[in-house]
Amino acid sequence: LCLPLSILWTTLALGASAKDPPIDDVAADEGIPFKHFLAFDSNQTCAADNHAMPFNNQIRGVNLGGWMVLEPWITPSLFYQFLGGDETNTAMDYYSFCEVLGPEEGNKQLKRHWETWVTEDIIKQLADSGAVNSLRLPVGDFMYEPYGPYVGCTDGALDYVDALLDWAHAYGLSVLLDIHTQKGSQNGFDNSGQSQRFQWTSKISSFPRGMTTFQHWPIRAAYWIGDFDSDAVTYTNINHDNIAHSLRAIENLVDMYAGHPAVLGVEPVNEPWELTPLKELKKFYWDAYLIVKRKAPYWKFIMHDSFRFNPETWGGFMKGCPDRALDTHIYQAWMDPSSRLTFYNNACAQKEQIALMEREFGPVVVGEWSLATDNCAMWLNGFNDNIPGFPRSPCKYIPCSLPYMGSDQPGTPVDPGAAIQGPHGTGMSGPSFGLCPVDRDWMTERYNNEETGSSWMSSPPEAPRGRDGTDEVMSLLALKKISAFSGIGHGFYFWNFRTDLYEPQWSYLLALERGWIPKGDLSDERIINSCHREDVGAFVCEANRESPEE
Image (tube, rainbow, N blue to C red; front, side, top):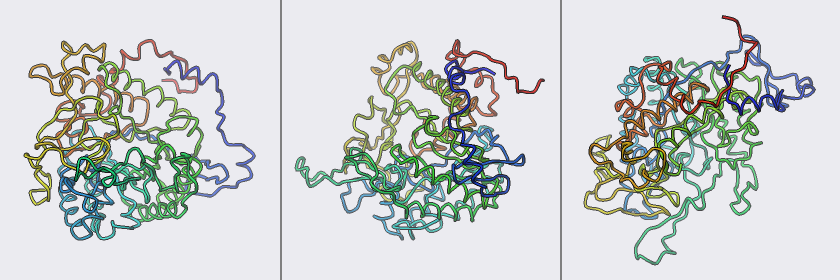
């Protein structure tokens, strides 16, 4: 058994985990009986018998993002119609999409979208690649416990989920149902269904005249778990109604799909932000786990780490409970510009923390990652908006795509004669004269000294003919990430399976087409040995005396 030195030292220093449940507490709690285990409410742990299924899956998957939960950056063709809008007619997320268009028009456009964004041919293509064995499907809580403007607007969505599950089963793929949205928003991002908080600022911007403006990032908050005080940076109360709503949605979802052979399991909430109170979040995870296990005893239960991927937060949580795993999302798109070596080293370095969490918590799945090394993808940080200071480098521009759902889509194609249009957020991102920003190219090593970041930062966003090293850099980076996520942990789901714009750094299908991601299984020698350079000198070997002899 080979371990990173830092992990070995930690093991020797800690000895037995300090998070082991007190024996007296377990003895006093007789436990709630389930099919293959006892659940102890007193300390949120379990005692499983020999029939309990271990989490022994090795996932190689992709996310089907942008389908059941809209995100403007993934499918901008749905949101071009709101360019040039004002406070009364602009949609920036799924919630406002249904709110602005209304149930009839919104549903009409969504059905066109559902028909074309994910198809049986795409699922077959993913399966035939040999590079995918599982799909992570983001769904809305409102699909299983309807509320607000989603009512009527999203009618028929569940029929498409049923079809997807049947396709997946037919092609030998499992499906993780990821509840991507929560009432009130669990993180303030548009991927939660509703950007929170949001403020129109046009009336306090007298110059230039007639400009529609807003702010989101400087005042972002999340209200699913309760009322948030931005000044004190804390929650003043807990919204038990919202939590109960989420648990009902989970129960309804389990009732619908408990018997479907394609379902791998459920993720009860995607990316609850790092300020979510841990006591309440863990109680929510525990209650949701018990709901799932009562009705679907063999489902996996995968919990997001709330952007706190450390043993201090999750070590020992739900110890002994079968089928649970921790989801962490690892992106490089928000890193500072640097050399290719920096990104290679960062990718391989993830193994150390994943190994630590595998030991202190248990199975780890990297539920989202991409090959993006910059923040250039249009609307990645919100419709017509950006995080202040992003993107860090000038972006490449390409012709905006024609609408994937057909020419009937309002607002398409993008007007090639129009400069960037409002409304305008605190940062800038959007189409200009028919061109859309996408990820930068990497230059060939001759013109981009890999030992430093300065030459890459001064390189043009689009590589001159004969100087494009993107294929080389992305291929090596993909191998290193796959090695880190699958060689130590329990696998991954790439974000995303496709993109509306030509963005192979974010599209698994395009990355496969470019040859960046290898087809076939994870035993490829190129994957296994891809981090050798980064790992040299960082590991020591010790005997595992409990392992069976060959």
